[in-house]
Image 1: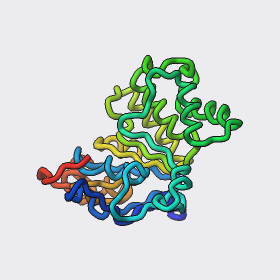
Image 2 (image 1 turned 30 degrees about the vertical axis):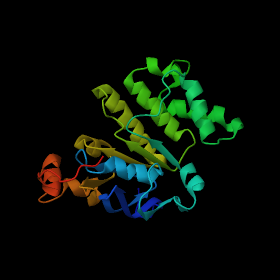
Image 3 (image 1 turned 180 degrees about the horizontal axis):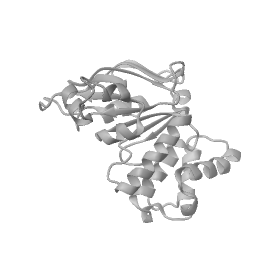
Length: 253
């Protein structure tokens, strides 16, 4: 990613309330083509709520989101056509076969029927699913189910891919494979992933944002984060230095 890389997602001053309580406070961020942006934060920092707003799954009470130049509120169909989303709990139909599910996902994305077979073949290659197309999703390991979840998010070749805790609950080998896939996706797309794992940032991300108490309190390159302070701190120490160690008064997801 270079300084001239175009912005594919822009969010400005996002605010979200649950009842009378404001839980996301004026979050703003940009995502560039060819970038993997890691959204870090402790549980309850507001990461998932923010990602849900960026995908249109949850409406902000104020603020603006543009995806590939389309306003998400005023041009939702055009904006969402540029977007792929894997929520923390993948939206899988466990009794469907992988191929049938991906065909179903392509149909939901309104892909022309003549393009679906090629899109499925390419997506299965990218996600390492060539050998399991005829298998029932519920019979696959969690790592393969996560691959299927990512496949449904990228079947329509979106510019922007949003992944919420994509490696949670996976074993070390599965984590390695999913991280390699995310790095590969980041070369041709723009990726935002939320995580509470500092190793995820170190291994995958070009840039990192840190959320706490519903606010984006830090945003910089992952290299800048490693050089934070005197440049001799471990990443865990940097994170604690930025966020502090006190318990938040409000918990959001």
